[in-house]
Image (cartoon, rainbow, N blue to C red; front, side):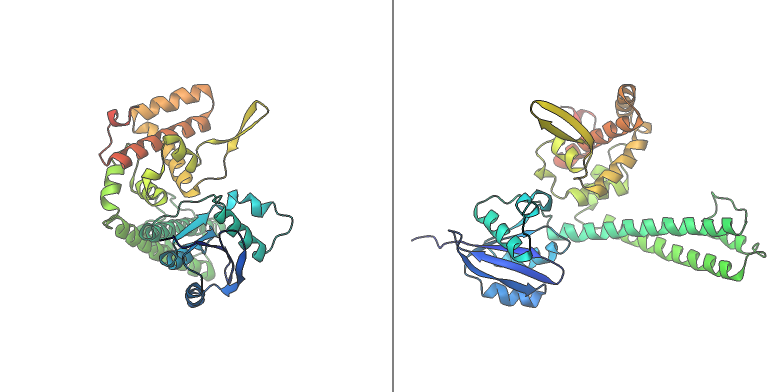
Length: 343
């Protein structure tokens, strides 16, 4: 019995519309068009596709829910890395219809530069963690604004105690010279600060109690200097740790190595690559600044690299060592020991 022919579908995804192209195995175009970016439209459209079909869509802000909706209906569904789609980026003529055609051609020829798409449950938890980070940024801005309002009005204050609830209430009773409008802004800012801080703590508590994260975070926290936020960020931004075959791959994903340019036998290193997970990069660099205080081994790494270069080079070396530690603990599912991370 012969195997049915596979049909190939390319999807150029946008906020309001999705352009599509359907080809057979020899590249003849069977269908082309545009549909609204809604679940109902996708449902009707997917029922009319020839079966079986394989699809590809470019990684965008809207890719996740579309992938989750279409994946059960497809023989296979891939997500293409946008930075590596040179066939689209370098095209002289570019529009949604041609982009969908190009994606279909790449899929049919097995040339799609795939990007890893995390499992849906972990993606949802990652969204929650990133929202928590947004709340932290907003609370920091509010704290700075409160201090700024006091400085603008010429009010002295104790910076180390300013954001304590009792001290702030005492300070309000001493602001006789402050205009009423500024006093109202101070009270409003404080109320917003307390609300956002409470929301942030509630989100963090929910993540730590989640059964898919609790054990994993506990193991990662056994590494010196790795706290709750660093462990959560690693777990939810990395996802399946087995997708990295080496420490070098994980270091590159975290954006802790420089870009390399080699041509004609000459090689040069550029600045830190912009192709990275910026959330992981930020957290790991911040942890690396404090890690030498908590670990003799990391202190030795820091001092050795500082003698060869500057403080930034030393911090990046510590961050790369932390990636090796995190990868080892996550793979082996055992608490951290210096011996377990030895090559």
